[in-house]
Length: 598
Ligand code: UGB
Image (tube, rainbow, N blue to C red; front, side, top):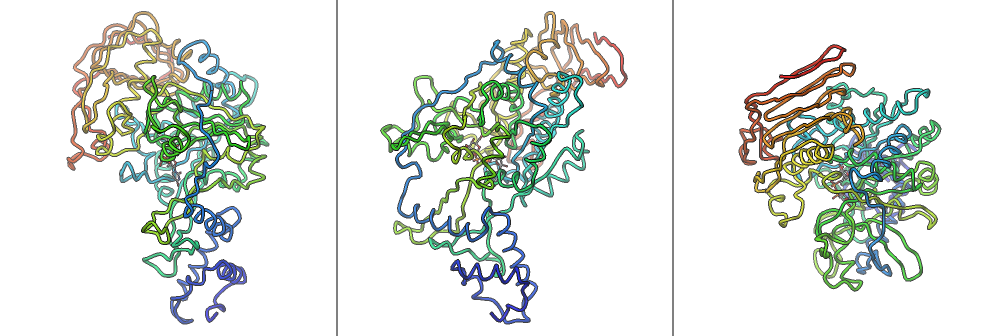
């Protein structure tokens, strides 16, 4: 009360709300008027931010928290009454007619899509010091994740607009959700690289705010241990993306501009865009309101399982069950072995790779009702079995893939299963943890993420008729991986399979020790026999035919120990580097037709 005169009328309202919501402890240690006044003002600035960034405001946050904490204390299972079963979805096989048709439909639809990258996470499991989107997806070209995503979106845009001749050139919107942990560094990365070729106006950053921490079962907000005029905060999870998109007004702008699809994706999957055209084709053909991309999942793999949940009251939904909840749910519902592989060697539940394609019209309709609020959960670490106090403060969390939970039964919710080699190779685990992954399960490390790109590119070229030598097994950072020829190309060279097939002809072969980097759009491999390193770049209106025998000492792979601090961190976390001994490197900066035959 003594400090009331410091506050604006809005701040007085916020103070009243806090007191009404049982938060008087926040003011208990406040100094006399005249002392720390600036800090008191900044306390209320923080409260105003926490209040406005949460759908329904702080009072609603506290109320929800009380309910969820009471449920958690009572040991209530969020899946009570639900029985899991294996759902059916669309299963695609790379390169067959069905796949090719979906890819073509997807390319047509792409100019009516917007892309949303959730990149607010710090990536604690990886332990990398920078932001994850700045990591090279592969080190042959050094292309970082966000560059690869931007180049993929631009390639989709160009291919899609070409198909709809007569219509004006569309710009596919690209949104990046950041957080205080990643925002500044993401801006700096984009600005210092001229947005990797995208118009700066085409990219929008939306920053998620953290949420207030909770000290006890009454949802008393936690005072920051380092500053008594601050509420301690922690990340709320990737589910924030829906409320942010809604409150930004972008959804309406997109809808008015005739867009139809919103595609969500995560920060470090170098394969994803190989799966997007076909998945978008599935959404369009099946008129799905929600389409989640999935891959075959190994039991206990740290990706959620797509599950059909049937309630005793008749409700059913197809939803992601998070990896830490799948095993207990199965055990509680008549599957005594829990999360285990079936006779196929995989879990019967497809693995969620958190790539969602939402139909914009129904998405807006739903968010108009919910404001973008997503079903939350709380995960307190209790001190003891009485569950009366926590080891450390907790907070509410939410996940973007829980969006379908509030949808009406009439919603068309589907999923699309793709080969994991084509669609999913995230970089999430640090070398030590990756080396401990059970044999046969994917490592999800920088090592496996990069090697997966070479494997996918090799398999795609093989399918297109190129003779690609078999891989060898090598161990880097304690992880045994298949090492295929190091093949990398720009998205504009080969976005979908039918396009890639037009770029290779005759009898081409690539040996296992080879490196091939294709950076230009109109580069055609014809009767090329590669045994060494070939790096080739060309402007878009140059057409280059590459053929004949290219043989040189090439780039050899050398192991790097992740503990060796004399090496840069980006190399240490993958456990290898290239020794660039000899290569054929050619650049075509002028338009025209060229032949490269050594
Ligand atoms: N992220 C944010 O933008 N903000 C946040 O507050 C938190 C994260 P993680 P997670 O496909 O491999 C998810 O930490 O959450 C971004 C699915 O829930 O990498 O453990 C962050 O930057 C799971 O079902 O993953 O697991 C990153 O881009 C499974 O699909 C993204 O959110 C798994 O991913 C994911 O964050 C997977």
